[in-house]
Amino acid sequence: MFFFILEQLNADLRSELDLMLTLKMKDFRSNQMRNITRDHLLDYLFNVKWKRRDKIVTCDIVNDIFDVTASQIFDYLRNESIKSARQARIEDFNDLISR
Image (cartoon, rainbow, N blue to C red; front, side):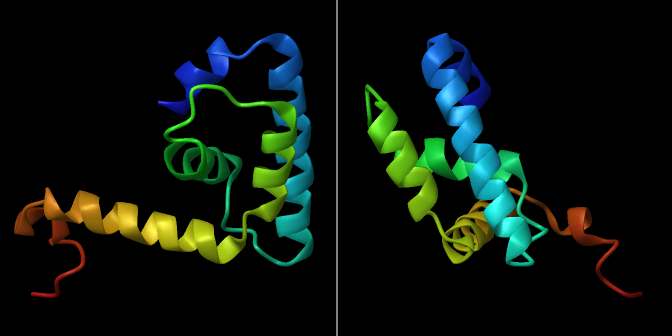
């Protein structure tokens, strides 16, 4: 979903977003948070932080990206996995269940 929104951003704003994401990912890596991917970060930003915004300006991009913590992303991912598990059937978990 966020890829469609990214395509709608103008080149300058997309460039700013890319730079901030790169810096934030370096910050996560320097703090040993190697499980968080760029897609996780983007998904969190577009589906939580920017979900109800019609317009995103550069100062919001900078502030929101640098304010995101690893625990916020992990909480978001946990909640998303719980939501997706609700739709699953018991057979989908056969590899986790010992026989």
